[in-house]
Length: 322
Image (cartoon, rainbow, N blue to C red; front, side, top):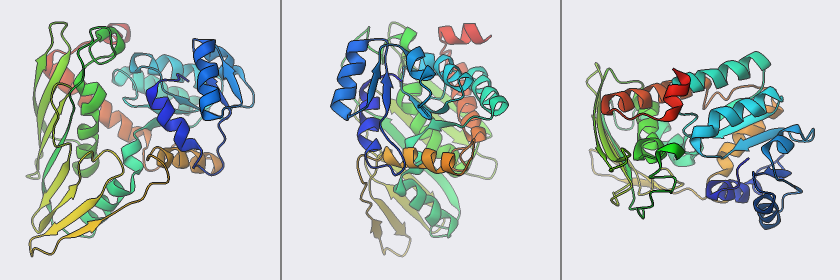
């Protein structure tokens, strides 16, 4: 649902997912739907989301529309009994996410946030190394994601009506990996820089934990950053290399100086891992993923909401949800 650029990446990955077939694509434009279907080998192309949802042969729908419409479109699918994999951020705020989750649970339909990094071998390996005590106790996480985007007031990144802003577009990744590794912080301190339309173009945050851990996070679409995640512990550190949110190497750096780098070969572009998780869950009759459960999505959106409140970042969706 929604044949944009991220849907193209997902569609390409579907060819590498067992038990999945590229059956149908839905768009507000028949021309776009038909072009997408031809390009990626989908059997059917619909010029409306309604037609896609009403097709009885559709088992699961990947919602890839802009995030201000994630809640509306996910509910449309869930109410029709269709399993949903919805792009990140799951929705615009906690109230919308809760509504989506409540609907999925009431109707007993599968729902998962498409946080594709959660399923990458690099992230799974990092968690395994931490659990094995390879770097001792974790004391610090540093994670960033920044790139320089062309200034387009009407484009998705810079337009408030399209959910523009660095936090929701790319900051969600550093926030998520820190949440995954350290849990919810006890204190957040954050600062944003804004465009003349009130869009956060860069944002930094420090998470503090009562257990003594700290995390430094940064996101931006006005500057290219290292785009790495480093986890420092009492006995060493782990580095997820540049463009860490994609399938990339992981280096273990113990304090004794004996480095070890782990390489991973993705079957396609990395989006196949989240799709495999969805198919495995559906085949097992599950309505929720154990790796990306509803509760984790709720914790993530709560953190994003707190950071937004600290910096006065608001969207029209907040008014609708209040």
